[in-house]
Each structure stands twice: as C-alpha cells, then as structure tokens.
Image (cartoon, rainbow, N blue to C red):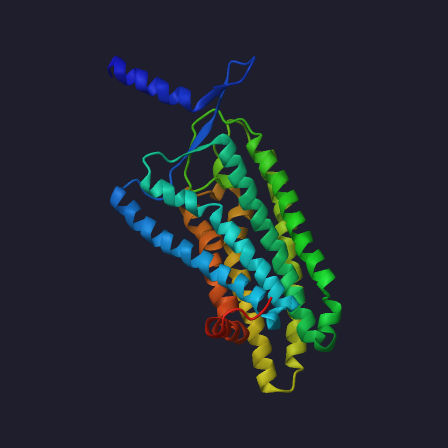
Amino acid sequence: MGPMTHRIMDSLTASTMRMIPGQNQSWVSEFILLGFSRDPTTNDFLFIVFLLIYLSSVLGNGLIIMLVCLDTQLHTPMYFFLCVLSLLDMGYVTTTMPQMLVHFLAHSQTISFTGCWLQMYVFSALGITECTFFVVMAYDRYVAICYPLRYTLILSWGLCIRLAVGSWICGFFSSLLHTFFTMSLPYCGPNRVNHYFCEGPSVRSLACMDTHLIEMVDLVLSVFVVVIPISLIVTSYIHTAMAILKIKSTQGRCKAFSTCASHLTVVTFFYAPATYIYMRPNSSYSPERDKQISLFYNVFTALLNPVVYSLRNKDIKRAFLKVMGHGRVGC
C-alpha cells in the first residue's frame, strides 16, 4: 500500500471522526447508510420503483386531504381522522424516502450525526403518533357503530381536535426519549449503518458500549406505544363486533364490517412489522431482514392507506367526481 493510499484512508477516517475534548477517544461525525445494493444497475431500477411508490403515496394521501377540505359533506369526525392519518403518512414517508432516492443515484451515502439524530427523532415521532392515532380511529368506529344517534354529540369537534393534538404530543414526547437514549451512546466506529435510514436498532448496534440497559428502556417504551394501543384497539373492536352482530339488517352489518375491516387491515400492516422490529430480542437482530420488514410499516402502509381505507369509500369517490366535474365545492 503506497503513501498516497495511506493519505487517502487517513483523510477519509478523519472526515468521519471527531475528537472528544480532554479524552483520547473519537466519535463518528457522520454515518454511512448502506441501503439495499451497491450495484449501479440495481440502484437505478430501485430508484424508479421507489420514486413511483413515493409519488403515489404523496399524491394519494394528498388527494384525501384535499377532498376532505373541499367537500363539506366530508366534514365529519371519521373523515377528519382520515385526513390527519393521511397527513401523518405523508410526513412519515417523506422523512426517509427522498434521502433514500438520492442515495440510489449518489456516489456518497453519508448522513451527518445531526441529520441522523433528526431523522430518527422525526421518524419515531410520526410512527408513535400513528400508533396512538389508530386507537383514536378505533374509538371513532366504536362510537359510530355502538352509539350512532349520539355520534356527533360524543365526538364533538373540540374532542376530535384534542384527541388528534394529544396523539401528536404523545408521539413527539415519546420519540424524544427514544432518540435521546440512542444517540447519547458513544459511537467510536465503525459508522456503516446497514439500513436505508437511521432506524434506532440499526444505529444502536454500532455503539461502542454495552447497550443492554438502553434496550430495556426501549422495550418498556415500546410496551406503552405498541402493546397498550394494540390492547385498546382489540378491546374496542370486540365491543364493536358484538354491536354489529346485533344489527338486524344484513346490509347494515356488511357496511359496518366493511368499514372496520379497512381499519383493521391498515392496523395489521403497520403494527405487525413494527412490533417485530422494536420488541424482538436483540439476539435475533438481522440487518438485511429488518430493512425489508421496515418497508412495510414505513413505505407500503403509506401507499396502501388511501386505497384500502379511503379511495374505496363511496363518499370519497363521490367527492372526487364532484370536484373533477364541478370544480370547488366549498370548504
């Protein structure tokens, strides 16, 4: 190895490390996201695929928000919650995918330490907010089916706004704890994250100290943001199913089950992979498998939500045709 090669390697090492004042130790100042492939041809293909997925997700969820705003007949608690969910999904997928698309085409796949911290925080905040918000949406369906005559009285606009804001506050506060504990660990190198974004478990595996205590704290936090919401959703749907079975009209039962089935489909696509990633033992950590599984609750859920939950809805279709045919219908 020649002198020039040594100088290049020393320069690269120095550029990704920063010295800790007063200590003979250095921390990484940036991470390298390995992504899915190093083959340029494969990356070009993945760029096209994920660009289409991203645009479809943003346009689909954006369409839901626009229709709910424009059509006054959609100004109900159910569609208000759908609008908030679409906003969450747009932010959720935008936190990771634009950077992933850039890395498919760029020669460098680096992200600064601060950028990684910020991405992890926003991603976790939106994810935890969505976990909490699914409980709110399950409660909405429970009230609509079990107390149809008092639906708008129970779920007043004031309560709807408080439930939405409370979900956001819960998500951003819980994420602060998760991100602080993860990013306060010492990272002395290596700095190669085997993922397409800065996800907590993948980054934490690079820490140069025992992370057992942090993992336990993360597990306890996961119980509050995953297990408890799932339990509340299941309890809510047990009562909802019992109420549906009491409906005498076959058409009424089918309509109620259809609405609940859409919500449960979205919840399953989101919670199943997220539960595996954040609540499985550290001994079963598999970077390649985790990257693929995280696509489901990060990318595909945002893509499928408009189709499964909203665009199949007759009211949404009517509002779409109304807007396309007559322009603005009032807000």
